[in-house]
Length: 154
Image (cartoon, rainbow, N blue to C red; front, side):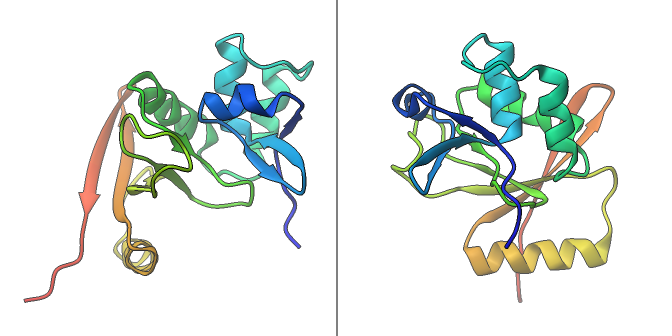
């Protein structure tokens, strides 16, 4: 069984209303990137500090600092952004204005330093199997560049 990374919280309704956290076996858990965002906003009721949260994120995410910046970018634009509790290279982006649980994920987003054709094929296959659109985020000079990739046959 995979290790679940996240911060356990008590007031699930508060975090659910914010579009954050996941309920597992009666416990409400915030994945690390969500917890960091809420901590910086002063909304996280936990003694855990930001440094510990980033250490937790680094255990499961390759580009966790860049992913946090992308996470924050979308949250500031009022999108629901989710990361799983199990290790994954993808963030899930929901339509703007949709509450978590009311609609399906629209995009799978992966933060990359550069694009590799073989890796793109594997990612595209995953997106097709999940019936999601695939988006890559590349951070250059503090500003994210988004590249939407799709499969087409002629």
